[in-house]
Image (cartoon, rainbow, N blue to C red; front, side):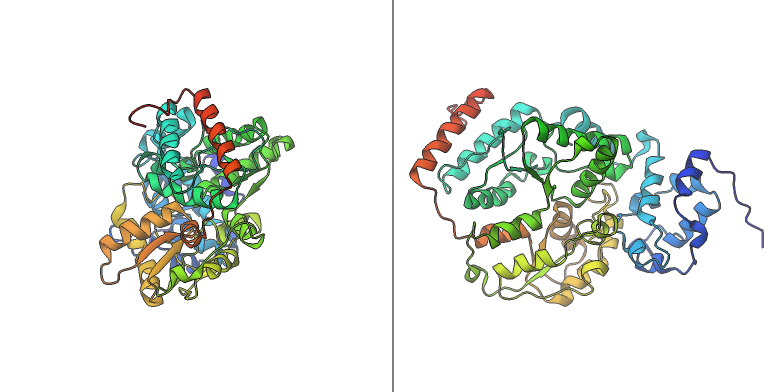
Length: 439
């Protein structure tokens, strides 16, 4: 047997990897046993333990040039279970950062640059975005008199970020949050520019872009004197935003701004009685909850607080029949879409990752799977059923469940009249002709 001789490592890479005590690795294999990549067809012989050993021996180029880091969903199950607490997802993210940008798989780098340059992943023009907001707001006002989408509202209490897939195609998915805001009589707003909720910079290891996107949100909040932003629902979007904001605050403490997570917000308005719910509309179906990796164990591990009990409390205000998947909470399995795997060109590999998730859903016996992340929702709703066909279920956002359970009470006439005047003035300011025939 030939002796393995460690390679000379680039000084910058060594400086980064020195943050992680590789010598503490017990080579126990816990990381590999908990990792969804293990056993992926086409990746035979690769697993997390092997990759960590390769890096320890200086085989950085071999790892960077492989697709292993790109198949990593960043779910954090490895680090959560590692007896020595090595932050393996951060190592994989750094391997991504070392890939030449023109060799980043699929559309991830292009989407990141679109976001930096245009304010959203799909480079949707501002005029199209604003017209869409006006048009959809008018449509929803038929059910919710007085409703409109407030854009760049000064002194709002809540800032909300849509994501480009909803603005571009899944238009009516925006209605769920809008109904919640309407019922709560929330003082909220969305940005006219830089409105993208999803942070593909996190997925590509683009540290600088991650910080740019976070600073953009901070500057916007300060400009319009907004109290709190709801962290984006996308697991990577919220985690990426929190990561970028932390860097911005470290550089300048004046960058500190208020924020809340969607779970805390929903718990708050339910407990305060700002919205009313009717469980009976969900009778006859059983519901289960998918713990998002980035909203749960990764958020807890890096920022000290993950959301496990709050979503369960919210669900139990809406339904009578809730069942758990097993394992759950910190030990829950990744859906297979994280780390950019939903838009990446690795559908088969992503579906392989999802084998455990499908098995969990099937064993739960639930009729409806509830999620708190847009990537998780797309994966569980669209990709998993293509590959695993022997169990049928519905998928809903947790805020969709809340919206569908609402006792929706129309506003008072004076409030409706006031909102209509505000909407007319807003769209006139933006040059959106709401009297146009197509509108």
